Amino acid sequence: MRQTPGTEGQKSEKIPDPLILTDGKELKFDDWYSKMKNKLRANQDCYSTEELQMAYIELCVGGEAADHLRPYLDEQAEEHVSTAQELFDVLKEIYEDLNKKKKA
Figure (cartoon, rainbow, N blue to C red):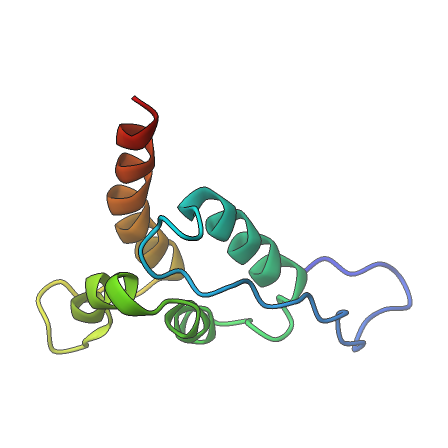
């Protein structure tokens, strides 16, 4: 994380947690994704590893969205991923298409 002079060792200001993404309808995926990326970037001192970022993403999904991610979080599964961006990409593939179909 880039720090300005004199801020080394200081914790970042806590950014509010985004709402839970469940089905991409009640809360639009693009809105959730933007808030998640900003949260992870602004509070990078709290989410400094891929494991912490992935755990936070898992906490911010529920219902159908959590079901979609489950095999990608299972270390024993063939589909297992190892980065936060890969988890975002899984959800993007599902929910960006859903939102585009709704607009068409």
